[in-house]
Image (tube, rainbow, N blue to C red; front, side, top):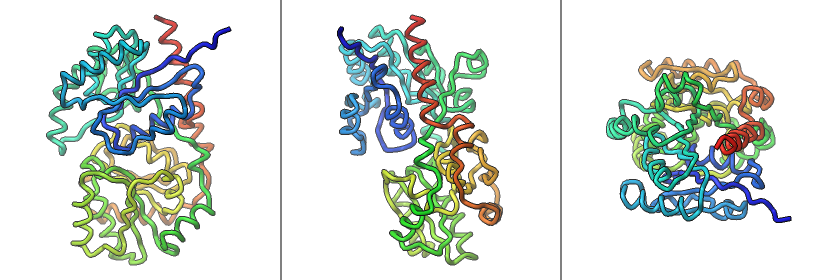
Length: 374
């Protein structure tokens, strides 16, 4: 008897920049039953050279490059051709307000299941980006007939209260491999030794160097904390367009010996172990998956109030308003540092709904239900 082929889902990624969205997609892709569902990743051809193409192809998926959305007519034309040629039953767009473009192409190509997925929100400080989002937001759901989001906050922002409260918007948790992120003393010692940061107070931040992640504030907070804690070190993991600006700020504050720029890391789970506190003063977040990763090893966290409160699983998570004085931030850091003992919290993270193994089963069931209904 002929082997039944898996259903291929076109995952619209946009620019692949190695951020939280890509981590989300790869977490689900690595764990989904590939005999039933396969992912094809459709990415802009001006993406950074960070796409794990070899891994994707080894798992049976494809990486398909298209013109960037800024070339909107060629972008839509190319997508329409790709959707028709591959006979996709599902197009799953992960680019928030920009989903209007790929989902329009999907409808024109006759794709029956068109998912708009809200992964983020917006912030008035990024006014140019915000303007585009606000213009396109009402159209994001026009060509969609299924709706996903990473949190209630993100779902209400993109789809509106009425649609969210109708029960038609599915929350897909930003789940992780809890075993990978659980606390490991040996890994902690190994990374601290590699970085020569033993016997230091290690504050960490993971995120792209873009306005949303608010690295300016990260440096200001650390600088204030460091004045009274000279044995403190800041680890910055990630890359991005604002990295050089932040490096200049560090030099200006004479913190070069205390701030380590570690770049992009494949094994970020190991770097969480080496930290003593995770600092996350984002301007906005649809969810904030890094917080869940940090909490899996009971790493204390201090985040801005712009991060959805749903990410608080452990007691040692503190939220501070971005407009509060620096001493409020540093006192919160001191408080959670003093009362926290590192230990494995993977069971609690799983119970809260963030185990990738459990959540992948839910996504698989959703895909299959959508197909059966049509």
